[in-house]
Image 1 (spheres, rainbow, N blue to C red):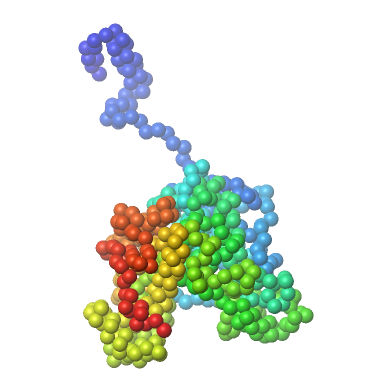
Image 2: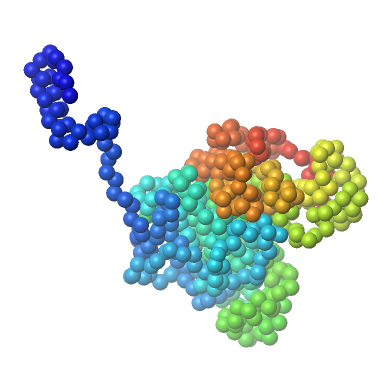
Length: 539
């Protein structure tokens, strides 16, 4: 190294000190092209331990994300069957949180003709009344307060769990620097069988599944800061039945203040089950079990299979939350938006042809022709003129196929119309803003004949295209849609507005101008799309 001619003794002295430092480092600067050495960072703990309110849990690292699976947030519900959940007993040892825990008891669900194949956990998750567990994915269990996204799974109020491969939170947590939580809670008869007429012990039985969800949100409030999350910035989201669960929580007094953003994906819920009708359905179950008012206590210890068998085929027997006037005091969005969540921004929307994954694969509706379509439309819309509906869709969508028309009209009359109703009533409150979306990207799987199916959005929002291969394929177009949607959900979690560079500006939805973000290869805002089609199919 050559010392330049310096203008002062002080400068010469500084240069000498620099030479000595370089020599002491053994020429390190030369070895790295005069770049400063990287700081030494301790490797993260492979099995981090976090202290929760009830005891310590041990997680693991996956692709740089800290994961805790099967964290208990409630006691075994076998001890509280048909009753509100209880807090778990504290523990003094360190509990492993390395694998998914039990799902709620439930019937076998379909696989969408193979669309959900890649979502299935392998091995399958066991079912048990001891099911109040949740899962956490976080960039780090540190002191940074990140937005928290709490997912309530689909499957109506009957099936499902937070353990699906599609809900894996690694990529979303890493992508957005957010904390992701998925939950299990009671379902079907064990969550919503309305036994209130059999005594005070069962007064909340038509809503205990919803109370489980509230308890999970209370766990988030009390514990998520230790996992690097912000309890003052919690978003709840869900698809299908999960979206209905979000609507339910938006209208419950006990949930107020536990979340600060809400997303309803293909799950608008406007009304709950009526108290009287659900009570009569429960009476049928009790009668089938051979029980009476005097012997009803035996239902608390009857085998799970006996209760499931007694409820099979009984319409309204535990199919969802009951408007009991106690735990659930009002319908979610009837006659208006719920005041309990007036200050909570809402993101809501659906997919263009929802029913293609909800209809059995061998259904003739997947193979409709222009000759067989009129009869199918007449059956779906018995009070409407089938020719008028078909002509409208063909005129507005010249390249539409016969099965596509059927599923598009069906979706417009159900998921889309319901989502617009919820958005209108939320917007009419004049409180927090509403944002609306429509997914209109056709999956290439199954030769494209499923168009834009129910639940296609899930793999996109979780940025889990690779884990949703059977639903979306894994090509670059699918990943581009995942980029759009996951970035929008992350932005909404952080700011309450889903606008972001991948989709551009996203103006709020109002009843005066129904702005709708359409996710497709080139996303963009359209105004009140398919309003004529919705009007034509409204029963």
